Image (cartoon, rainbow, N blue to C red; front, side, top):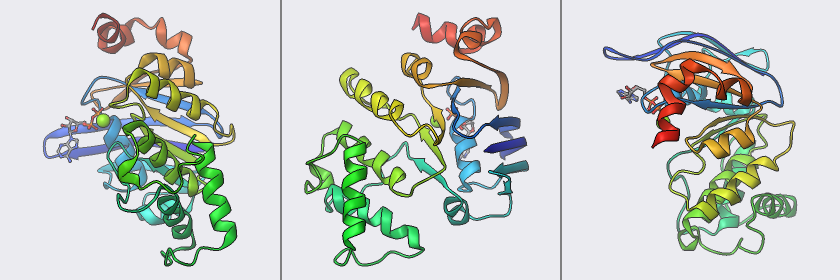
Length: 244
Ligand SMILES: Nc1ncnc2c1ncn2[C@@H]1O[C@H](COP(=O)(O)OP(=O)(O)O)[C@@H](O)[C@H]1O
Ligand SMILES: [Mg+2]
């Protein structure tokens, strides 16, 4: 589903991605872990097209992405839950999801005239992320955890084939973390997930396989058991996480 070869991205003299190879099968749940500055967010930015690559090549479901815009990649089924806030605060949770659904057709339509199928679709997505009964609440009045659930709903509303999650539990309480991890675990198994996450309990619970990024390179890849027992991974990352 995702095939990345020799992907490079420089920022001036900084090699954020120094030749990354990554292959993710359809329906796989892949975690990308590594220290701060390893290049994880840059990998997502280049994959979505928000940042141009300096070199290398990317394919999604066999289609070459290299010359496609962010919008064209989204139309191919690539969606992202942002690490930052993308909600429309004055709008209700349901209206936020409806905007995301109606944008699928290629252009935003006025919120006043959603079809009944679109309203039903919005309610279904809200239920999927644990926000049933919260559709009428303005986004600004939701708790931090609920706002992240709504951000997940916005990504799911686009019916993606591949979903990128950048630190979905960032800033959450332990209870909120458990809740969003359970919601992600319950997503359709046909959806391909690429997850950047610092909470190793969440990572080892969700991921089928892990890729370890270090200084812009994929230095290891394997199952949770293989990665846990990899000495080099301990030296650059896991050892520090466990001790801190
Ligand atoms: N927009 C940018 N401009 C300049 N340098 C950047 C930019 N984005 C990321 N970097 C640099 O690229 C490297 C990788 O960053 P990032 O992808 O954010 O790492 P991670 O998400 O793994 O913490 C870091 O050295 C970071 O400072
Ligand atoms: Mg990051």
